[in-house]
Image 1 (cartoon, one colour):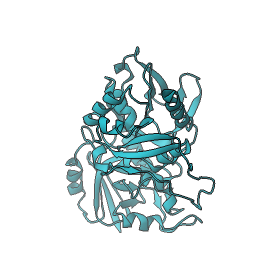
Image 2: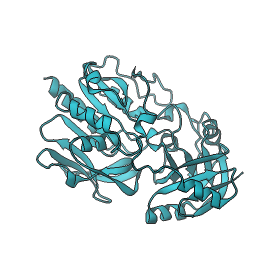
Image 3: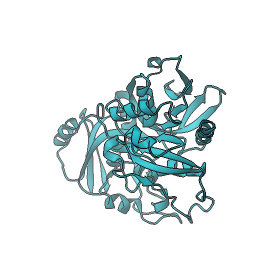
Image 4: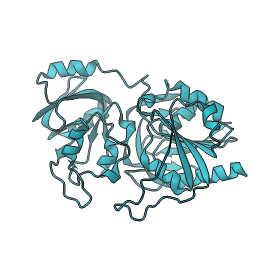
Length: 374
């Protein structure tokens, strides 16, 4: 079937449609990861976004239950150069075409994704529509212009769990035979779900943590009533600035329990400490971003998925140490409070997909909790 991608500035791309028939709307961003498309599909941080994958062939190894980062895909739509209608891999349980159709995600393929990515890099991310039903490009451009902008939008409360739950490991996984749950975890972490990824929960468990996941708007008092050894602030979609309830809770928790934040959690910590955030021109999305660790000078290759960043100049240097810097554009990638047990990173140390250079941060969190307990 034919599909059309229309951008708000009037740029039109016509290609072949896969996945679900119909329309989807969202902010169009690009991801430069070489593998791991299913983990990208199911990352809740992509809520409200249409994702362009720069790897030219997508879908060739199918999909399987072990690679899901959430119970369903969160991308609004997918753009690829070549989308495979078949899969060829021993791990595949369902072809990507059927998988995305099942979850009502439209796909446009057979377009020049290099031209599209260059356009987004030059002009910045913009709103767009993918349609397999509307044939009038002008009508689709108008629809794209009517989409609510990501700026000022709280999506954390939209994707968050509605109920508190104790996370249970997936159990023995034939696709990951070396991975097994810690039988008797000795630390208790309460994790705020702003759009949490499953591999974060696995990593916390691997460090000996029992994890209680709570909704995004859970009060600090209710979290402390669970007697945590530490609090984790997850990744998530949207603009951090309107998520004021989370910033208030972080201020009430700071100094009363160790805190570790990733991605949106990092941005919320920056705001809670009196800093400011701003939107990046085209965001950071991919599994190959170099980040310098300031205390050692070592460079980590890291996984990124964010549209906003914390302004380092807005933080008080007497209170906050800047721990990590992005070597592509010098944006802030990590911070640590100088006196309180609190630290965060902008990138994704849990990867999935991506390199494992930053797994040590979960060990650092465990060490912080052990020192806090005395």
